[in-house]
Image (cartoon, rainbow, N blue to C red; front, side, top):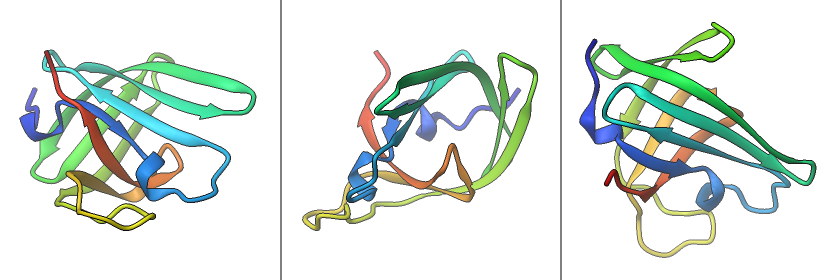
Length: 109
């Protein structure tokens, strides 16, 4: 099972979504587990996942219900929606959990 260590940590779509009523968050741990969170006015929907990278620039997630998602990704700094300095970011195609872009908000312990 191949993991891209550059993905490790916590990521949030919040810096790239201006005026959106919900946000998405991802957490990737070094043991191939993690979680996804979709947060909105109704509350947080947290789902446990396992993840790996079957090829360079490809992320595959399996959620706790057995559903599998495969997306392409790139890692490069990006400017938040409000402007300012670029932040470490990952961009997914197609969108992952309703968002294309996530900013790194935490690092693994």
